Image 1: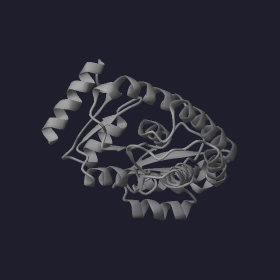
Image 2: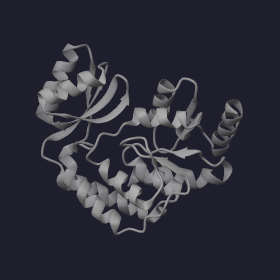
Image 3: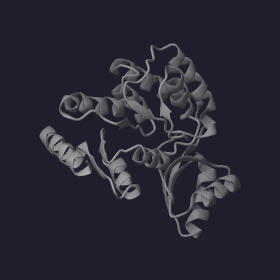
Length: 248
C-alpha cells in the first residue's frame, strides 16, 4: 500500500501541470496505482485493494520462498534452468535480465548454476514468490475481491503487465490485475509496446528510479526520468514539457 500511496501522492501534485498521458504503465503492485491514475479505481479503493492483495499473497505464499534477480542470461536459458531446478520466471525486465521466483532451495541451486554460466545473481529480500504459479490461490482470492469492487473503464489507456495488451473494460481490469499475481510480468514487452504505440517520454512515479533506467536501456530513442530525480515539482514539469517538445 505504501508504494501505491507514494505514487498517487506524486500524481495528485503533478497531474494538473502535465500533458495528458498517452499511456499508463504499472510494474507489479504499481499496476494498481496505474489504474487509479487512469480512473479505473479511486485512490481510497486502490489503497484498500493493495492491502487486500498483500494479505492474499502472504496467505498463499509457501514457506521459505522468494525472488532472485538474474542478469546475463537469455530468457530461453533462464526458462530451461527454471524447469531444471523447480523455479519460475516472475518478471522479464530485459533481454538478459529477469526476476525468478520459487522455493529458496530451488533458487539457490539455480543461482549457483546461473553464476557458473557467467550470470550476476542477487537474492531479493522478499519471502513471497510474486508473479509465479505458487500464488494461484492469491490470484483467485484477489479476483473475488475485485469483482466486489466498483471497477470502471479506464479513461486513460493502460497496458497489462502480463501481456502488454490495452485494458479497456472493467472485466479486463479485473482479469489483468488478478492474473499478474500468479503469472509472469513481461515488463520488457510492456515498454516495447508503449513505444510502438507512440510513447517517447516516460515519467516514473513512486520511489526510486529503476524503471526509468530500464526504459532508457530498452528504448534508446526515448527519454525517461523519475520524479525522484528532481528537487521540485517545477523541475519535473519543466523536464516533461521540454522532453515532449523534443519528441514532437
